[in-house]
Amino acid sequence: MNGNLAEQDFIRLMTFIRDNYGVNLEKKKTLVEGRLRNVIAQAGYADFHDYIEAALGEPSGELLNTIITRLTTNYTYFMREETHYQFMQQQMLPEWTARIRDRDLRTWSAGCATGEEAYTAAMVIQEYLGGEAGRWDATILGTDISTRVLDEAREGVYTAAALERLPPPWRSKYFVDEGGDRFRVSKRLGEQVAFARQNLMEASYSARFKRKFHLIFCRNVMIYYNAETKAAVAGRFFDVLEPGGYLFIGLSETLSGLNSRFEQVAPSIYRRGL
Ligand SMILES: C[S@@+](CC[C@H](N)C(=O)[O-])C[C@H]1O[C@@H](n2cnc3c(N)ncnc32)[C@H](O)[C@@H]1O
Image (cartoon, rainbow, N blue to C red; front, side, top):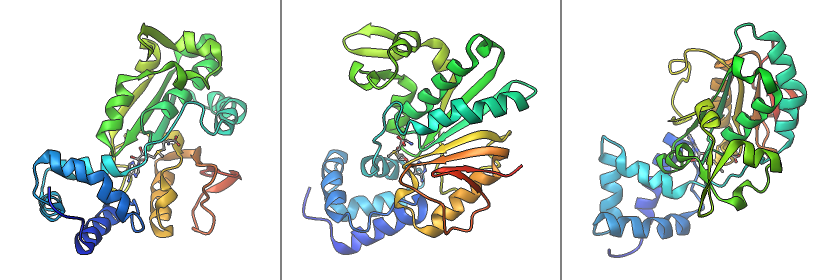
């Protein structure tokens, strides 16, 4: 593999990714160059220019998928930003389990990375429902643009260190020790959670989801989005939430100043009005 990433190629790639995925890499040329160098060499391209040309012109989007997977931050962990799970236990679940008549409770983890957020939400719901859990269809959908993280999420195998933040009884209740520091989500937990690829920049989510959600997590995903993109994504979440449904964003994020239709309930917690 020859040479470095030329400014012109970088700008083309950066603009395409910003416009199509919302991810802003403007100040990250060194990171992009470093992360893509090996990928390009392995794929057998002569230089950055040829690879970027091929990726942007390829209808299947396979090369772009690899690029996105290498360039996005997929950092996550169980029980992250625990106040949201407390809010679920104390307010969201009491409210919704009283209101829902058909025992169908729908949650979406948008930008789920390796699945810890979706599985944590599933455990919180199971714990809340207790003996009633079997009578409910309480599903969680986890989506991401990176197929690599989705494969890991589906596999549902974590290390002991990864489980450390969970209350100790949950570790044995919801995970099966397979030996070799591999803990697999239990069959029951796995059945409650499904994963699929979804780019949040796509125009509408309504066509994809038959029924609306009661709760959406989109935490630490929109951090690099500009105000316009964030407002558009928040608007699409609003449209696929049940009236009275909640949206959780990251604790360091806000929707203020975006003129969104949401009511703010607490910092980082929003609600579609009834
Ligand atoms: C830092 S992780 C956050 C994971 C989890 N929500 C949490 O808070 O721990 C951000 C995830 O958002 C995904 N992501 C970024 N832009 C996206 C987009 N346009 N559509 C879907 N997923 C996206 C990334 O691939 C990454 O896995």
